[in-house]
Length: 150
Image (tube, rainbow, N blue to C red; front, top):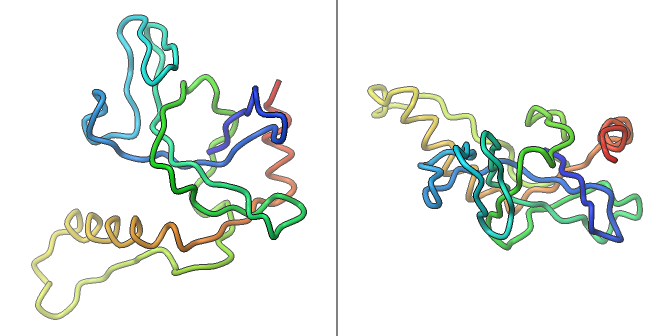
């Protein structure tokens, strides 16, 4: 996902991904809907607003175009969904380095594993591998994001 960086002098937008969390009323989801006006992690939410738990990525210093990213190692933060500007499917941002996304198939001895259990196992592997990955945002995608800002 892309989020407008309103107060940042260096960037117009940031790259992040929704992350499931178990605290602050998220109940293992990446989102939380508010029934009444409330503040969470210094972010104001109105009635019917959605909080999104986000794992941020930082720009790679080796990319002069500033369109390559790696996971920022600071945990998850919360944003108001009204700040989001563009949501991409996972495969629309090109992975340029690191282990591929885990696709697990039944193996001998694990034939009885349910698809949900296999997906959960793949999610654990991906969470461990994500900090090793690098992603690149195409210029046309950046333009879509910029068109949605301000």
